[in-house]
Amino acid sequence: MNGSGLDFEKPILELERKIEELKKFTTSEKINLQSEIKKLEDKLEKVKREVFNNLSSWQRVQISRHPKRPYTLDYVRTIMSDFIELHGDRSFSDDRAIACGLAKLNNFRIMIIGHQKGRDIKENLKRNFGSAHPEGYRKAIRVMKLAEKFDVPVFCFIDTPGAYPGIGAEERGQAEAIAYNLHEMAQIAVPIIIVVIGEGGSGGALGIGVGDKICVMENAYYSVISPEGCAAILWRDRTKAPEAAKVLKITADELLELGIIDEVIKEPLGGAHRNPEQAMKNVKASMIKNLKEVSALDKDEMLKTRYEKFRKIGIFNEPS
Image (cartoon, rainbow, N blue to C red):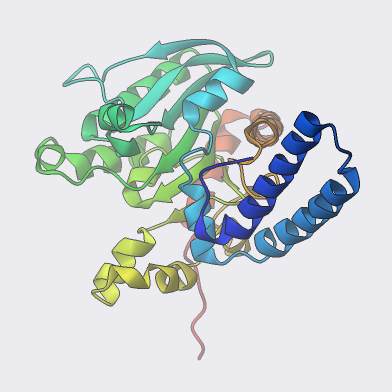
């Protein structure tokens, strides 16, 4: 059972609590309540499907932010091996909001780069809640160029509400750092696979988001702005975030339909936080499949396809 529930998960959590209580009572009192437990489990399965198969855009955003959802380093520890973390941008400092390093994915040598949030207040302060400074993006591109030098494919895991908007970040060139990454990532001559594992907010996401394949987990989102930010600008009212999430078309299925992403990675029923092991297995399978597809291209063709992929985004026809 997952104790940290969202509002729309409350009926599910209540049923899970009842089932757990009955199981404990059965054990302690040695009374057979299997038929009652089975009825509740059937009801639980039905309620889960009703709730999670009819989620709104805003509810998916809430799931993408769930504090028990797997983060980048959870994936590294679970589906990769031989991880060696690389630090620093060689100019200012080491931004802990972005984790980078060499690892192995099965028999593939890879470079992994990803936003990293914290599990508690202390770690979130260290990781800046997953919102990177310019030095984080400069560290990322430094590591990507190192991967290119040694012909190692790059995987970028996106999970950020956005780049850090503070004065210090602006003074050190936040916008320039992101823009530089966009320019350079378009030309790096090794496969680059992007996986949005949680929040994909604004330029903070795009700063490590240019690649050959863009995959978004079923309950993640990828957007030019957070729903709250959009609501604050359009309606001057952040409480209209659910309405903003709907009109922004930021969910994985909507992004796939618009041709912005290449794949929706399925999550276990209820979201990655309810079954992290299965969610990470699904991501691993997608990573290997996409790496094999991109690696089959020669480098000139790969770079041309990457360029054309992004040039096509945003094309639309006006009625005459």
